Image 1 (tube, rainbow, N blue to C red):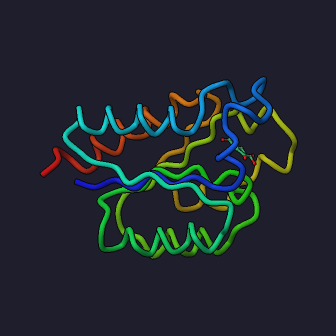
Image 2 (cartoon, rainbow, N blue to C red; image 1 turned 90 degrees about the vertical axis):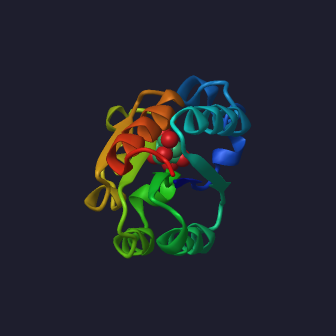
Image 3 (cartoon, rainbow, N blue to C red; image 1 turned 120 degrees about the vertical axis):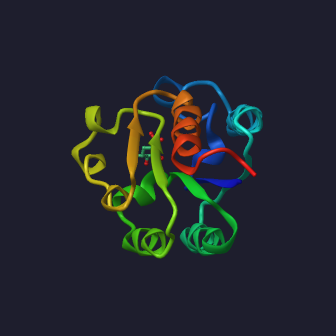
Length: 146
Ligand code: DQA
């Protein structure tokens, strides 16, 4: 099945911005590793990043017909976006929320997530490995690819 992996604002700078927090791997590295793992699990991914809230919302709408599950790192929109929460509430499959850093160890404004009200699971602080762990969990929730 098809799994959407969606990334929010500033994640295009992954590997370059605040590497002490987010590490040195780039988003292209993450995409490559996710693609390889998905294939191993018998699934396929569509991988997107945007700095624009509406684009993330449009991809979530697209997922309604196209995807069996969603992995999403909404980045800063995690803490601000009722609109992304509403879009995810209109998607019926499983959703896993990923944060590269441990948001609970950071500023208190990062401790609240709108997206967690919808997510079936949340991964934080496991680095970019969190994306692969989320894919494994989705694969077990949606079953073997077809
Ligand atoms: C993040 C955590 C957010 O608080 C932050 O705004 C990000 C990235 C993470 O992956 O750790 O941009 O979602």
